[in-house]
Image (cartoon, rainbow, N blue to C red; front, side, top):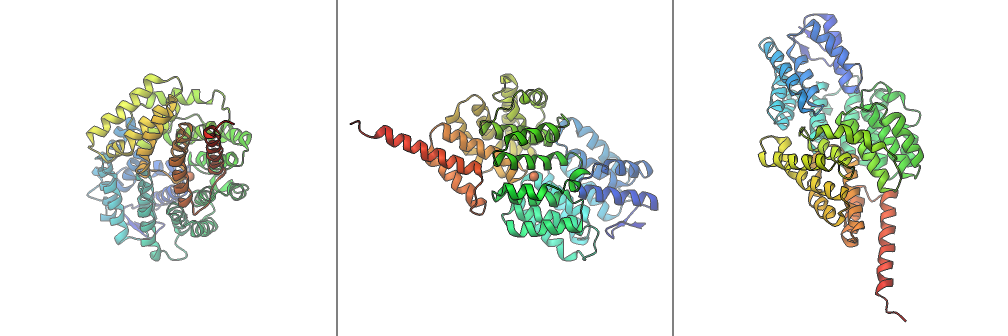
Length: 454
Ligand SMILES: [Fe+2]
């Protein structure tokens, strides 16, 4: 038996393997690119270490790719071989992998919370509960989970900085912007590679319409996310959004080419960054050249995936309206078919918000804005369940607003803008201010038309 970096007993017996396991855990917390190497070292030294096999399987599931399910199932089989020798805490991780593979990630969350009840200092379980809740769209649960374990963290707990980073993000997603900023700054001070905490503060500036302050925050802190896996592209995405809000579309496009889309992968997080940035640019009238083409090409291969509605809707952004009618129809039909099955939690989300949102994106791509507005408005109430952050889902909110404007439904659009402002602590970004101006000039135009001719 050995103890890990967070003071948890593990069933590992070799000090060197324990060291690799500690590096794996810290790597998960820091979104570090080297995490896979550390995990690989653990698994080759101790293939019967069930906890590490479970983490491998859960990490694979987090990639949101149906073709990788066999790899996650292999990890579960390997974890089961070491199940008897595992400690009760470690077994709960294996159970969590099994629950997710069975289509019930919310049960995986409950199992992580069970770990945290007896081992509140287990930072890995804290991060997994946080991460799966993020995928399922449960910000209140994220916040409650972190706040439950916080009293157990001594000031010198090695995971404390990362815990604060998660707390900052959960505070931001539940609208506590001031507390989120203070907490995120503290997180980064305690753990300088806490890219998640740094990124939570970027979210605060995004949500409170402070793009210039957001740029100040990110500029000069590149070291905090340079070590990251593809999460680093997401932080660059945030920076590009800030430039776009300030009307600096050249800088946003430059970041798109050199950072956000540096690697032209079909990872759903990378595709989400790219498609939502291009869509936001187009809504602002920024020409994006042929940048959709490689995205459409990749997304055309993802129509049958169905792992996550969040991913599917972002794939659809690259298909609908981009000469991919057959693939668009295939994707929308598959979302509807999955929704009818409703066997898994992913399929429940295909039903709501999936079906209405997918119909709306298809109609938007066809230029049928009245229908797009109706469908997207129907999806809006449950869009949270698509998962991801407010900032990520805002691309769908913007498309809803712009579809309503283009179909002339000013009153309904104004109500959405008011609601959007309320969720942002009463602040507005330049996107919203420009739409309010459009509504004002649209109404002026209508008034002029209805004036009697002299
Ligand atoms: Fe983000």
